[in-house]
Length: 318
Length: 253
Image 1 (cartoon, rainbow over the protein chains, first blue to last red):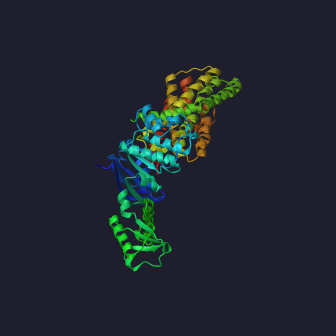
Image 2 (cartoon, helix red, strand yellow; image 1 turned 30 degrees about the horizontal axis):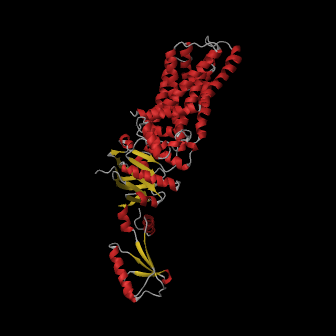
Image 3 (spheres, chains in turn purple, blue; image 1 turned 90 degrees about the horizontal axis):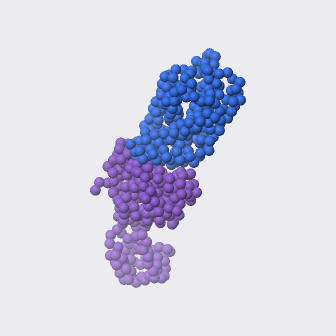
């Protein structure tokens, strides 16, 4: 199936000389939830800005639904809904008025039933006649999402959707995003909250210094880069690792109170069985054991750090 | 043509007008009424007729133009500057709309408001002086043309401005003096040389002169010249707006 968004060799240099994007190529699959991760200033918002028409690309192309976002912008933009990072709303208009405005702006005829559905979905129906300036920050965020959904987009960009949002709204938003995916909407979200990407994304892209460091299926990424570690708590401290366990991969930790094993990629069950057998043979008992798996956040931090380290060493300089 | 978008912007802007009814419509009516009281009734009674027209009636077209110029600029510039300032412009820039549709929405609403204000001021003037309109079609044409032209100018100002001060300064320091010196309150024939010639470089002279001709059949410059000059300014403003959208000037990074 054709990707719903095809970004090819996209670069952006701002008038200030800042290279925000450097030949980024990326395909977004129809109907997926794609999380774009990256530190501040990595180029996430520029990438979204170019796709949505807010920023002019220096070179490269972006196709949305097969339409070039510059040459055939009208057809491309009809497909896209955008919830920007900044909380920017009108102040004096009512919730209904501003959402109705958005629908019209994107070329759709008035449809009060559709507006009602969106407002109810976002728990805004009770506030429909309130002026936006009287709403809380979280409610304003909901209004921005409602505006982006008013024209029934096929692609939804959520730029840092959880910024300044309380836990309840974040959970609501995740539910809503999943429901939208069920309806076939493709969702691209940028986030600082790795938890958010881990919770929702099908695929993850990491962008740093304007370059796409990796794009990977979330589970594959966690399998490939995620570290799984087994910790055995010992009943008594050990001075040193028994000779019988040398070369087993076990290391003494916590001042001799723990044995730690880092799994090699592969069959974990096999490794655990072998390990326990060797422990038994060496006469080492343990009173508790637990495993720990690195989160997407750990992976992300490692990747970005690795990038920095390479830069520091003068390797991979751009 | 994305007519839903044009309608959405137009309605949104007109709603802003009606939300601020006092500031939008009542204020210009009151200030114009004050002009009539001072210049029309109090001072005008001691003035001789100009070109066969009583002074109170003579200043009506100039006052209407003065209000239309300032209102068109102020409405259109605020209309586009506010979303730029608050950041909500992102929605218009990311919408499937052409520059023409954006301009039709914003400038159309600002011009509509100006025409409304012009009509209200004329009606108000009718209470103070006997009004006659010799060429109603030309009168409406000048009213609409000037409203559209200066709304376009206001749109340019709103895109260019990066602060509220700039938004105020151009109408205050450029447009109001040009309107006052453009023959709102006198015929330029009353000026001595070289001021009379210098005044001909003021574009507002042509607007007021043409507009006054549509009322009383008398003018400082030929009505065809007035019309051409106004159209010329309209084309110039439209060209600048076209350039703004082509280059993304102050709208897109």
